[in-house]
Length: 285
Length: 307
Image 1 (cartoon, each protein chain N blue to C red):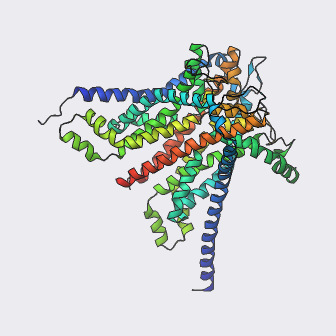
Image 2 (image 1 turned 45 degrees about the vertical axis):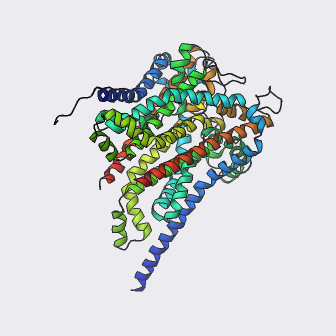
Image 3 (image 1 turned 90 degrees about the horizontal axis):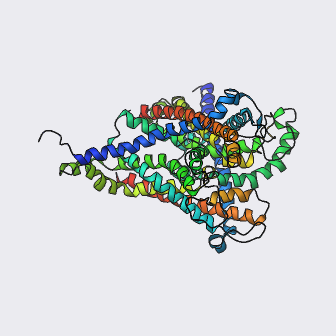
């Protein structure tokens, strides 16, 4: 090798190492703010939580103490309603896409479900306002539930489809070979096999819906008082965080962090479970 | 029996599930129609001027969405400017350069962080990012780049800069993880060919990148779609004032945040209609971005799936 070639070789190797270091730096810079947000919320949140937070009602403006019992129940009711409306649609559509989905109509549905999942949640809120709040003439938990249902549908549809597709083809063939009709094969053999994946996928979609704020602002509106009525405004953790974050009271801000912590804990636990369940599925086949 | 038996149960079940699939399909169209019909008042009164004028005055019932569109586009564009190079770096590292054992936990971390609710980002923005910008970053920018029009005016903390930064943090995991998927979809044959000819790791990565270009574009568009529609975090830090200003320090407004702030309090029919039209514009914008992005990502991953 001449000196020139050696130099060029050295230059290429240096560049290679430089890019390695650079991309590692990118990863560090990218992860730092996210880790900061996460750890800050955990720290603030843990110190803000106590038993009162879970079992007490919000205190009147200006008083310290109290909790978010009504918001916790409210979030529960909202995601319950959302699941009640959204899950049947999502699961059935998912079954169709997985079992009969080899045609242009299914491809279009798949595509639009993906597009739907990219529509801002605030826009979904506006639609729920138009189709529920306007005819009913007042804000209600039901309207919030409809908004959350629309948000859940694309995720549930696609997860159901993917989980059913993971069931080996031989299961289907075995069912059909012993003379079981196709629909019974799907319901009694395929679905139970895919059930674990579908359930956790659904839980994940529900957890994400629990973290939504924007579509609830003008559908469920929020409520400082105890309410479980479906046709009345209802409080939720996320809307409480939003309202409290703008408030000038230390104690409200403390509670906002507490609520944020509860939400994150919920979503993270479900994400981890989802990850573990789906990974073992992939490993099996 | 050589013929396929016709079964009532099969027929019913297939068409029942198909009906629900049709429901999902038509949902998108229903949403579009409802918003179009709901904003009929302002569409007939202002026409295209709605998008081109900049008075947003509920008292006089005058509505022009230009500052909102400007705010949405500017904050999203700045966010992409910050997030894109970093995400590509992250994607390259995770897919091309990182040792295998490092990839899994990091991918998992990135996915988890993408699931944090936007209200939590907003909370962090108000109590950590904004004070930090006001006390350290903005004064520093103002004194070092005072000749530029971007860093003028009082340092509130709240404003376009804060919105762009929080958006960058939020879209980064999305762009990075989709870009990584795109890079991983490219067959190893290409890497092996490059390395076999004596290329270094980075040189082979450059070849992979040129193949993955369109896929990364798709990932970017998906990130942009997310940034454009992001509501809570932006509403909480952007300052909420309907103005167009070159300075990133000054408060702005975005389409999503005007809806979040004003919809529940909109009193007149015209006001509600104007806000619904803003939602409609946002809807169309995100649909176009998402459809384009999905098509690109699909065509790329499909191209390599068969090989």
